Image 1 (cartoon, helix red, strand yellow):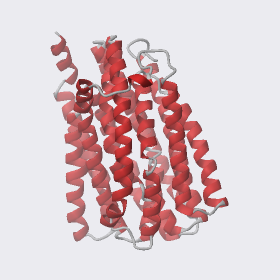
Image 2 (cartoon, rainbow, N blue to C red):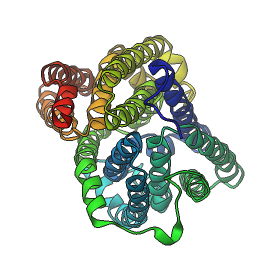
Image 3 (tube, one colour):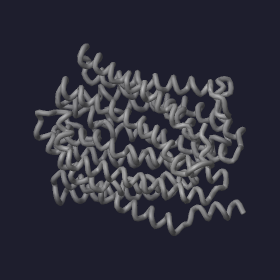
Image 4 (tube, helix red, strand yellow):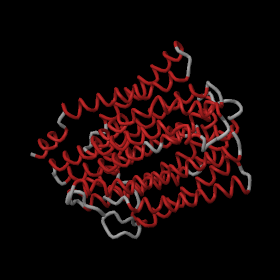
Length: 447
């Protein structure tokens, strides 16, 4: 456990964000290893199937992951307020719900994958590999959800180190199995997906097992795992807006991906490789956003309002600085980095470089939006990020692409949609952050 209501603010946030950063770095590396191994040893069609997977996976998984934001906020605030009984109840309710959600994700993911891929205008050559990859991947739905739930509980208690340890084991396992299944046994995209599923289940089992052994109010007692209706209602009330936001944004990204797919398998491979690398820009963004959500929730629970404000400012500054540094490096190094996936496919590399040169210098806006959203979620205001991101990253993005691609039918038109909508969401978040005085609202409610 890590009480984030005491000690130096910068140290609290950095020491929480660093393990999250390193864990996601490992996750990103083994995701990229899937694409590198498949691209080098199977071929372009398989690379397109694996590399273009992000938007569909986020569509399916993002909704359920968003729901657990509410559990994390309740656990963090209760811990900050010293209400250990409520922590205990919230933990057991979240785990019970995770079992149900994991089974639902597995059934839905395996069932609807072919339909979604058709709606995404997946190239006919790539379709068999894509269906095979996603169906195997979603067989691991329970492992995906349970891992995210258990690690979310650790993080809500201020412990971001244990999730890192489990990801280290998971990443090593995934890479070893990738090499075995794809290169040695020649299982292609099914082998890559199987390696991912096994490694995710391993991480989930480790995290779940540790929760049953920890010494604290978040200790999991298997016989007490059940849904407490009132607590679940509160968790879903806070988490549902983020879940809806994630799923609708995921749908928007699927529509964007379908427009990219319309340019053919070369564009799919090149842009899919770019999206894999773009994940590195998200590392400081998501790590500081997670740190801010937990820092804000604990400090508001402890009524440390001034400390919450200072932490919010520090987290935003660090995130946008690191994200922009990565963006500048990516801008200049993209031709070299993209060759890792398919060194001889000049056309695919060209697509990825064009996308990088269009988007990377605007990563600071992406960081600003995510950190603002993380702060507001920690404050329990989960509807604000939902409305802002749905408006900007879904409605405006889809409308822009639908109209603009018809007027200017080149792939650059699609790429511009990202910095455009990042700018709009950053403006709206900034206006709300300073005008709404969200901390003052808490002070009045407690008075």
